[in-house]
Amino acid sequence: MAELSNRLTALLGIEYPIIQEGMGPFKTNRIAAAASAAGGLGTVSMPGMTKDPAVGSRLLRENIEQVAASTDRPFAVNVPVGRDAAGTVLPVSEAYIRAVVEARDSDSTLSRQLVALTTSAGFPGEFRPLIRDAGLVHMHKVGSTKHARKAEDAGVDVIIASGYEMGGHTHATPVHTFVLVPNITEAVSVPVVLSGGARDGRTLAAALALGASGVAMGTRFIATEDNTDWHTAYAQKILDAGEGDDMVFPAVYGPARGLHNAGVDRLLEIVRTNEMSQDELTRWKDEALIRAQEDGDVDNGAMPAGQVVSGIHELVSIAEFIPRMAAEAADILRRLAGVGQPVH
Ligand SMILES: Cc1cc2nc3c(=O)[nH]c(=O)nc-3n(C[C@H](O)[C@H](O)[C@H](O)COP(=O)(O)O)c2cc1C
Image 1 (cartoon, helix red, strand yellow):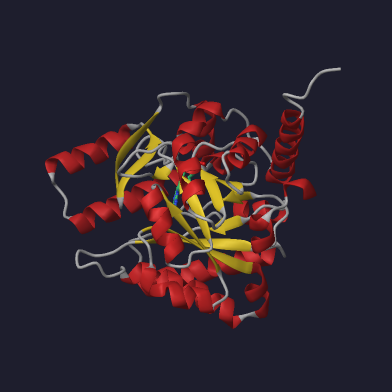
Image 2: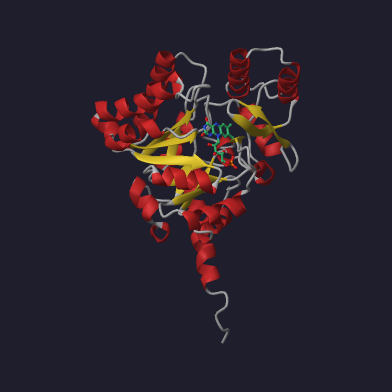
């Protein structure tokens, strides 16, 4: 829909300002390829924070190549950036950043299609020159205006403003999307993408009204016909969940939002009783995510999901959903443009 084209779509080379965000540690290869093929931007997810860096970067490269083989459109890769107690970027996060840069450098198809790196959690300031020189659009996800300003000052190209209602790792200071996004669009001049709570054309139109250039979604893309990498039981839980079925629990980098189940209760117990070392706990959390995403253990696994689950009731096909969402937003904006005009 040409009428929703803007500087974000131009920068990324996409048709619609709609992004499928990273949802590690399991694969999002199929939904990424489908989102890109439908005119949005798909994102390859990182394969886990407790992987041996060499193993992790090989898996990430395989996922990148799988997506490139499934669509000829542009796509992104997400790398959450962890730091150790001394403040050094974790070896696995560094390995993932380097794997993305190397993939882009090594292959002419990838250098055309792998257009963006989305970093999240910590900010990889020391890797900015590497990311910039690789020609990647650097998008960084933040939950506060302070972090948005810091990322813009460091040269980031796009800010993803994610509100507290988001699924997955959320923020220590709870600022909701409706408050956060206009705060950030006022504070920075690079394009801003709204994340957290988006699910349809109405939410895309609202994002544009708040000054954002597009939306990014996680939870909505889990419940899609294209998500055949994941166990269907997870998507069914998203469809069944209502208001109040989500909660915030301690995750790998601070709080995360997901569905309440026995797995989350067990996690809270492990944290309370201090029965595991930090390393053991991080591994337990990574495995709990994989248990739900890959094996469909929706009782004992961990199921990140946003509050938006309460508004998601049907499995959609990404090829139909993305253009429909854009058309719906454009239609709403056209109709609202007439509001306030005198009626003759
Ligand atoms: C299952 C799941 C896994 C996620 N994993 C990651 C991740 O690996 N890296 C990341 O930056 N964000 C992750 N997120 C957050 C999403 O990228 C996105 O910011 C969030 O889902 C947006 O809010 P929404 O769920 O309301 O659409 C995850 C979210 C979900 C639901």
